[in-house]
Image 1 (cartoon, helix red, strand yellow):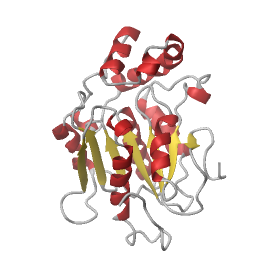
Image 2 (image 1 turned 30 degrees about the vertical axis):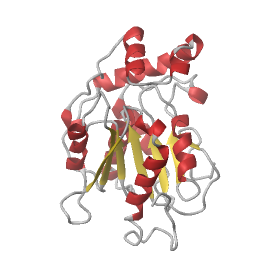
Image 3 (image 1 turned 60 degrees about the horizontal axis):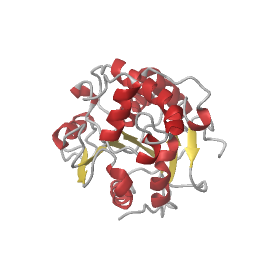
Image 4 (image 1 turned 90 degrees about the horizontal axis):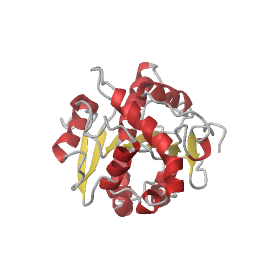
Amino acid sequence: MHEDVNGTWLRRFGPPLESGVRLICFPHAGGAASAYVPLARALAPDVEVLAVQYPGRQDRRHEPPVEDVDRLADLVAEALPTESGRPYALFGHSMGAVVAYETALRLARDGRRGPLRFFASGRGAPSLGPGRSDGLRGDAALTAEIRRLGGSRGVLDDPELMAMILPALRSDYRALGSYSWAAGPSLHCPVSVLIGDADPLVTPDEARTWLDHAADDDGDGTGGTMRVFSGGHFYIDGRVTEVAAAIGQDLRQHIGKDNELTEGATIVGV
């Protein structure tokens, strides 16, 4: 890890880059930073991916999980290297989209350098209220839900792996179940919305509500983009190359607009 990267909260899957854009990724409920290894490989070497590692999983499994979205966002915001001089974007999938959103609001509130762009995946905007499964409780119900969403059968069918994952899954759903959106200012950047066309948790129309929270930097009245991929809730697993291309295309829009981007910087995926 470079000295500006918090080794407790952030994981890098690839060699560090001296310049260019960073994409900071937030995992889904029960997920861990390693969920973004394929995306990091697909974006390398032009975009440096840093994935947030929540407490209570993988190498942080001995730490108590954080069962409150607002508290989790407070802690992540403190850990992000926003003052390093490197431009960055935020990407959150499912629960990760909510945590990333609340993190972005805290950065703006504190007057810190904000993201170039916000990527919301597999979730409707917080203004819609609780998600369809946010209130689930009990191991049987949580396991059934992850199976319904297309979670890895190799994990779901392994009792030892499930015993390791369930504490984080329980805490994440408790965090989602207690989360309440408070109306406030829009994000200070454009938003890119990504969703699978067969996602049982959110429809394209629901996902599109993220655009209501976007800054209209271009003056075109949109404040962002919306893309629907073939697949379910975990559509990214089968569409990594396409998702990387979409991220690259949207980040490319900021080259030349933000003088913090280094001259000659390239973005993969176009």
